[in-house]
Length: 223
Image (tube, rainbow, N blue to C red; front, side, top):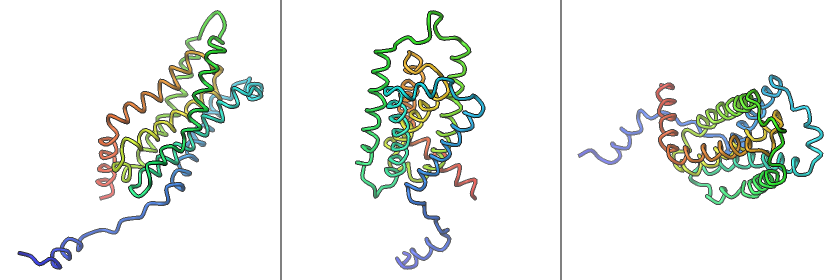
């Protein structure tokens, strides 16, 4: 039987140093800067909606924008915080006030302005542009978040995926409000809320496998 000191020495002989993760708030800030860059590039390519200045002067629209932005920021910070085992799960409550503000504002607009496209309804071209904005915003941000949390997130995959999905959905909603005129119609429920529910559902089902798969791929690539 091998002695304990010899066992410890043999196990540690070929171990490689582990690079320490940056503080979670710093990493969240890096991801949020990427989100700002993605939204800026979309603004350059698609253009800001022509009535944005007028809409921002309306309290309900402005409150909805503030709510979605705060939700995206706070949910991202919460995702990086709860990905670490020494951080309290109470950080999951961080974006709750912003979420309530955002969703209640959407509900108010839907009740007050259910149809805003006129008698011809939603044009196919506008629907395609909205879907393209959704994909171009959510896909790169989701992939970046997956890569940045690949090592820590498997400890709490469901909580991290829920917060990350909420952040991506809120930022996507912000982008749609900046570029498209359908703020309070069925489209906002289909694209914004529906996308958020889809992300949360998929994340809850496949979060652990997803993070583990990415971490293993990154490990093999490093070797």
